[in-house]
Amino acid sequence: MRALVAAVLLIGLPSAARAQDTDDLQSTFRVVSALWARSDAAALVRQMAPGGVSIDVGDGPMGPLADRQASALLRQLFGEGETVGIRPGMLERVGGRPARGFGAIVWTTLPRGTQVPVRRTVYFGLEWIDGAWRVSEIRLIH
Image 1 (spheres, rainbow, N blue to C red):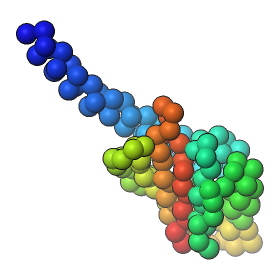
Image 2 (cartoon, one colour; image 1 turned 60 degrees about the horizontal axis):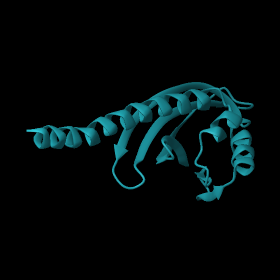
Image 3 (cartoon, rainbow, N blue to C red; image 1 turned 90 degrees about the horizontal axis):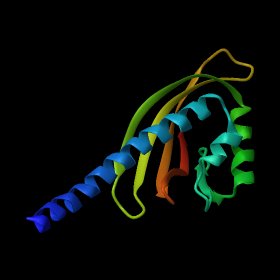
């Protein structure tokens, strides 16, 4: 009987861990989305994978970029206009080792010198690294 109870408990652990990972993924995605809405490049970099992040702003992927490079690129991107809205899109956890997740937001900006809003989709690739979800990829779709 003890063996059966132990087996049931062990079988339940992966799903409990997966639920925790999913909760953490949602929380991390909310934080990353809020930082993006505030155009906070420095704080976004603190959410990135320690090995660097790949960023594609439309000219093809760059990276993995180190913190300073990623921060500079994000500051330049945010400096092109004012964020007027963020709308969360999909968020999905996928398998693999390390675990991966993908999320998207619709980012509405008002480019400098114009009154015409521009909407772009921003995809975030996230990886479970050292007990936390980290951004490993950012892709902008025009």
